[in-house]
Figure 1 (cartoon, rainbow, N blue to C red):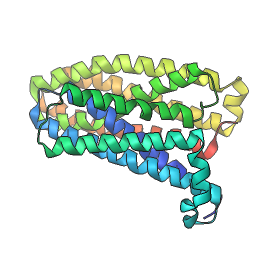
Figure 2: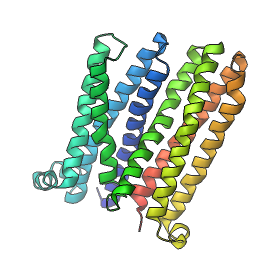
Figure 3: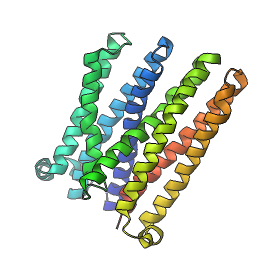
Figure 4: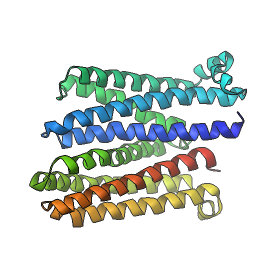
Length: 293
């Protein structure tokens, strides 16, 4: 494999990593948002478990792809002992291992949880879950394009990842909700989510804008570089998904007692999920394939 293939492999693992964190954080958020609906809890727990599994796969694969890109001797280079030993003794290697271990323990926690057939999280389980998320979120600021920026930029990115994952990862559970419950209960849950989402979007915009100001030193960097062009495309998609979310909140949610509008909301959420995936694909592309200059 040539270096370009390693780059695209890294892009793919990053997309899967974004999805995994969204599944875990968004699933956990919806688990508590919909805690009174036992028929939804098992599906959400499975959703979180899938996210933890994808996170473990993407993190582990990402580590070995990095090894392979260094060795550049084909697929067998992914297990080159010399480069493995070198990477394991670097901060980058430590972050990869820490993230993989966190996902592995998170997956174990969820598998044990599902095997016991107990939908309710105990205080201990919730605490362990939260602690395991910390190194996963932290890893983005240490391996991404803000790793060499200030501590403020790294904190902003971590917050950005959290709120983005909460929003994007909530869409599938909400789609399931629109199919499983109806009438006033559906309207009530969607109304509550809309209120929280408005707060989430505000934080998302504030953090995203601050990070952009730190990344782009001048306006020419934004309009005259491939990274800037990709960033503009991403912003256009973000604006689209925000407008769609606003439409769902102000048009569909007040009418959800009508089954017809509940069905239409389901279609709108599917479209919102598609836009969210495009945003994740674009983000991964500009941070991996293009890179900021």
